[in-house]
Amino acid sequence: LEAATAPAATPEDVVRAWFTAAARSAAAGNHRLATALAGVRLPDEVRTSLLEGHRQTSAPLHRAVTDMGVPDPDAALTLVTAAVNVCITQVEAGAPPDLEARRAAAFTLGGLTALASRT
Image 1: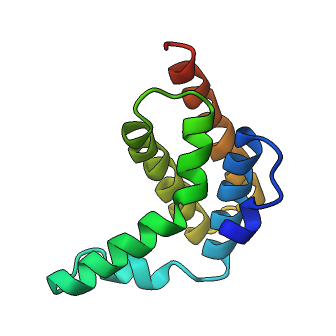
Image 2 (image 1 turned 90 degrees about the horizontal axis):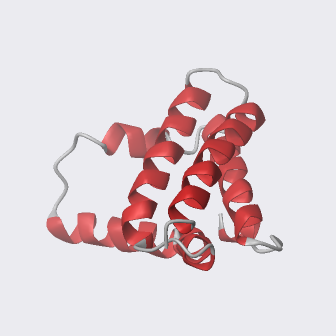
């Protein structure tokens, strides 16, 4: 995901690239393990390691949200993550990845823009 977002010129482009990369990754089957582990109680050290890896992976998206001027980027990122998860679920159910990515990114950018304008 970091490589997919690296060439993006604007924070909005980072968000679009993020959704595209996540949707294509889901279409390739790369999220099935995460889905399978979702309800499993993992040892604390494993869970901590996975959460740290996820935090590092989502750093470009966090920077984009911050650069857009969204107040409380952490709270906004929780909502963005929900949209990413729905996008992935749709793709895993057979939806075209690029269409779902465009749809989810447009929805997300609308919300982030609205949040940024309330500062």
